[in-house]
Length: 247
Image (cartoon, rainbow, N blue to C red; front, side):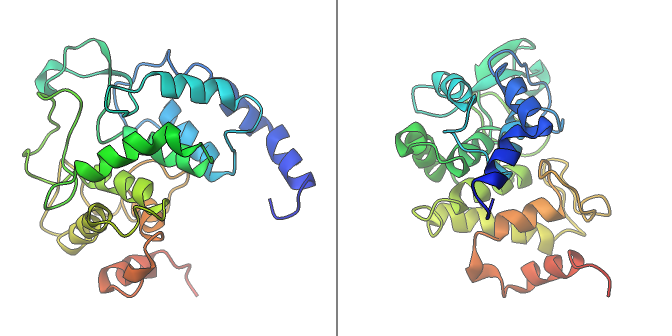
């Protein structure tokens, strides 16, 4: 992308990019049953954002329109989710949001250069829903709760919140952003003793994986990279050392 216009033209004509843009046109048709599937449309949207796709690119106007059409009355992005009754759902598809999805959409729209009024309400709501220990397992359904105590942090939710808040200079230094970052660093610090909502930090977490989809080392480091004040933190440094290739 540093050699326009040829490189941008190449990007937009790439078969992988074109396939993913076409798949995203089915945004309002997908029913999410679990968040850790790599081929979910919310992850494809974030991947395209990370690869340099913008809302002004061909085909994106229709997609963004569908995303924005399903905001709730607070301006938070909703998707079609089927939550089992054991977790407080209805066992049928519903338009709703959880901490495992809407910050990912918020991050992607910001990185793609969407106009501020498209995401401002969702960004404000994200900063307001943080708790004293970071982001917890929350949803638009009051009864919803993942596999853990209601007062525990959700590591993946904090990861997505740190990205969505960190990419925006106006929210990067807010208490909400700092709590999300501290929650991630805390989890690393107590990794040998604690799992939160079944998220552990072990051998699988430490494998370098791309695209940046689930809760793992490279994805956490990417989220933390938006916060230079933490580069010298010993916990960040420990993670960074694992990210380095062998000499």
